[in-house]
Length: 167
Image (cartoon, rainbow, N blue to C red; front, side, top):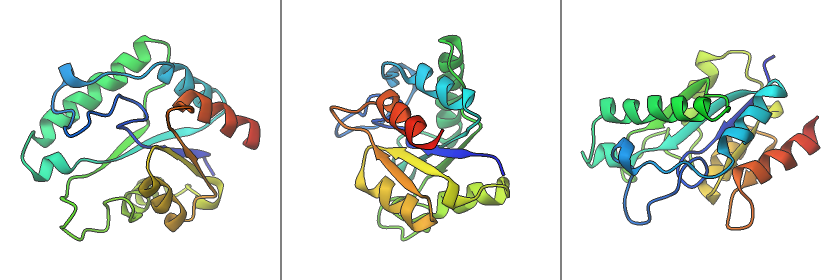
């Protein structure tokens, strides 16, 4: 079994654009201490999986190729700052009314990850996100814990709490 942690993107890894979406690299703003947090998780043996709702794809505000490019550059930036890149990225490209199984709070992206990484044991996994829907999806998938990023807890803060509780 490979230890795995699931991480949301907008509001956790990068600054959330209120009322808008990150549609291109120039709009991506990496939050402080993200590289350090991801490096710490990797040093403790965790697989890093990003799961993110990307409704703007359904709204045709950017293409899947443009989103892939943002994620490629995000991983490069994180690595250039001494961090660990994500081992896998899963997106939900649907609108909130499409009734898909992958849009959080549904757990479909977790199950997609399990297909690609059969050694994932959800009861040994946790999720770090910034919304209740992140937590609901993680719990529905069977993850043991949810750590919430907010004004007082960054990804780095949640990572330190997670490491203290699990190592």
